[in-house]
Length: 286
Ligand SMILES: [Zn+2]
Image 1 (cartoon, rainbow, N blue to C red):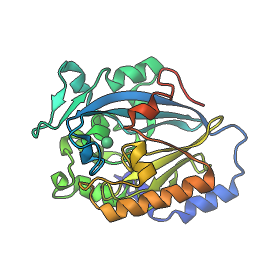
Image 2: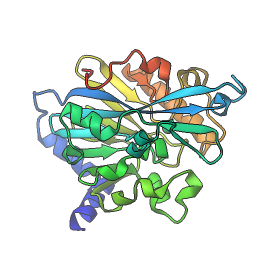
Image 3: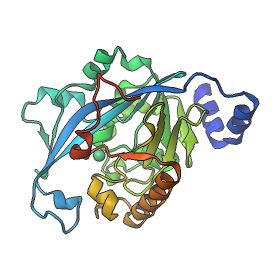
Image 4: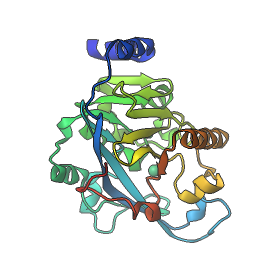
């Protein structure tokens, strides 16, 4: 418990970290060595217009789903955990009670990690874009890691009504006792500017995106569900079921300005077409 309260204390006083960063000259070795983009399932929907209001009404669609494993000099970091590994044992997938979405998991995340030579216990830094089931499906595997989560998301996850936000609390129940950095805004995970969590609320109360400075590719923003499709990014579209649509729009605008300023590419977790061009684990991107 002491480490938990200590971590929380540090989280609420980020100036300490800034001072520490100033006192220590940055290391010469590259912070981020590489990143693995892991196939973490697919979600087949009957009507894509739920995500693209008024467009492609009644058309089925397949959303990709990914997890991202980052090799940093200070340790492994995992971003999002995909559909639950148990779905891999269901050849017809798992359909929601409304019959509108069927989730598939072709290969369990644990197996994909094993191919890279990583066990769940090796992950020291862990964050999810948000706590919906297609991102938190395997969250309970990562109890050894420090959890980085926005305060508003944490409150929704572990508050009285997680279902109100579309969360399935059993997915992340074990994270209650993780050492946690409870964030109120952006956070430089390793203190060297190579991996930055950015608050991006709207889809859920404490949704966040991750900016990874890859050594060759340059800065890449991992979308979470800030947008689900390139279409939504280009045409500034948010689904009506988001926690806060106006906030979602403000987030898109803010992240567009950030991307323009920094030259960051946006890699959209659920956009199958865009992801077809990105190498997948066990290959890595640099
Ligand atoms: Zn999602």
